[in-house]
Image 1 (tube, rainbow, N blue to C red):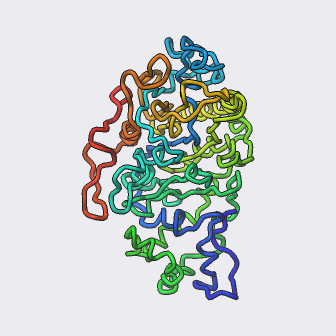
Image 2 (image 1 turned 120 degrees about the horizontal axis):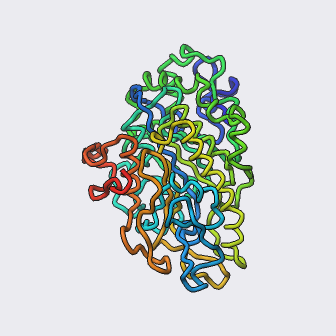
Image 3 (image 1 turned 45 degrees about the vertical axis):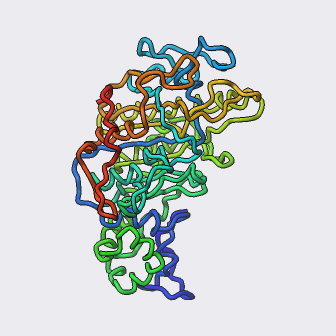
Length: 452
C-alpha cells in the first residue's frame, strides 16, 4: 500500500484543508519524513546528462566458489557438485547453471579477488563501500546512492535520484541513509512487507500546491520529525522543500515507472517468473524488480539499489547445492535479460550495474554438505557503464581461499562506479557536519585501471 494523502480525519487536528498529520506522513509502509519526502527535499537543479547505477545486493552471502570462481581441479571437498562451462570469452569459465550469462560474458566483468568483506550479515558494505567498524564522521557515512544524488542532482523533479527497491528484512534490507549529506539524499524506498509495490495512490489526487501553502501549520505537522531533520540540517527551507516534493507527488512518472503492467509483456516475460513468498528473513524472488530497476533509470533515477532473494544456506543435507539449483537459473535469466535490455535500449554506456553479496562461502564443504561464511574471498559481477567488459579482474588461489593476485576492495568498485557516472572521486571533497572535508572513497581507492 502506498498512500500519500488519505481522507480527512475529523477526529484529529489536521492541517491544509483538513488533511491529518498521519495521512500526510504515511506512504504505505514507510514514513515520508524518514526516507520518502525527505529524500526529495532540496532537489538539485536539473542535470541533462543521465548516468545511472543499479546496485543488486544478494543478501546472505552467495557462494563465490560455486558461481563465478569454480575450482574443478581442487579436491572434491572443495570443488563441490557443479562443473564449469566455457563462456563466449575464451579462457573465462563460470558455473554450468548460468548458461545465458556464459553466452554473453563479453558484456560482463567478473571481480574474483574481492578481498575486504567485513564478515557481517549486513547490506552496509554493499551500500556504502565501507565497514560498519570504520570510524564514522558526524552524521555517518553516506550511502553510495546519496553521494550520487548529491553530486549529480535529479534528471527530473518527478523522479527521486536515489531509489530503493529494498525489502525491509532487517540489515539485509537496509539501503542506508544520506549520512552527513542529509536526508534529502537518502533513498526513496518504495517497497514494504508485500512482494509487489502498489502504486495506485502514489500520486496526489485533487490536492493542489495552494492546499499546502499554510507554512505555519505545515511546520506544525512536521514537528515530530524536526529533531531528526535538524540533525541533518534539512529544516532551513520548508517553503522550497514542499514545492519540490510536490514535483514527485503530483506527477505520474514515478508511479508509471514502478508499474510493470505498462511494460511490453514480451519483454517482461524474458525476465522470468517472480515468486512473491518472502524467504524467512530474506527477500522474495522478485525477478520483475530487475525490470523495474531498468524502468526507473530510464525514467530518470540516478541510483537504484535492490535486494534479491536469500543466499544464506548453511545447513540441511546439501542445502547449499539444493538451493543453488533453484536460485542460479532464475538469477541467470533475470540478470542476463537486464543487461540485454540495457544494450538494446542504448543504455549500456550510461548505466553501470554491480551485483554482489556481503561475503563468499567456505571453500571446504562442511559436515552438512553446505558452505559457511567466508569473508576472506568474495566475488562481484559488473556490467555496462562504458567499461571494458569481457574480462576477469583478480583471482584466488587453487582452493578459492584467498585472493592470489590483484586483490580488489569494495571502495575500488564504488570508485569505478562513481567514475562511470562522471564523478571525479579523486578531487571532489564534501564537508561533513564538523566541517571536515571528506572524499567519496578513501584516497588509495582509485577507479579500476583495467575497466576504465
